[in-house]
Length: 115
Length: 113
Image (cartoon, rainbow over all chains, first blue to last red; front, side):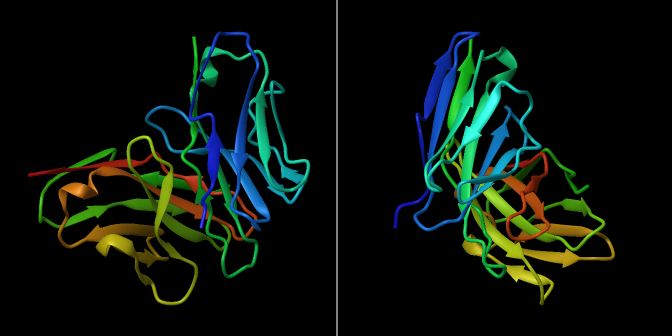
């Protein structure tokens, strides 16, 4: 079946521009996570949705970052007034929520470069 | 708070040699442990996971890991590596369903012919 997809795969933005990154999770997956992976680092948690509810946004680095999942499926991560330090790969992951099966399935990521 | 430490940033090894990638975690609560592999320009793929039960976990591509609670470790091993195993490997911990993954910094495995 189809896995997690993300678009665009690559995005170049000039400093100060707004960007929107899209994640299509696996159909039926209740949980959706966003992670930020800086070059040469491990992914770091940004935010978590259960269906359309954003239950944890403790990892969002500033109020320029905003995420939504209005219908409980597709999610969008928006970054306003991008800065150079926002350059990273943004990974989306989805999972079931049954306690015995909560493996997170990752998309290929969106590589954001802010110039 | 959880933290995950991968002790080696790079591990060079010759083809067909054994390899161990080290991972230590710290957590005050029950923890579930994972190893993911990331090939260039790709997302993360799960190699194996420890949720409960047997402390020796077998995964895909011939990898295995051992959960050691007393040493708070979850080292990844493979008895004989292939060139195709060259990739970045991440150890991660979670408190359970609906909880984020906390990742280590990654270990780059470089398999040489």
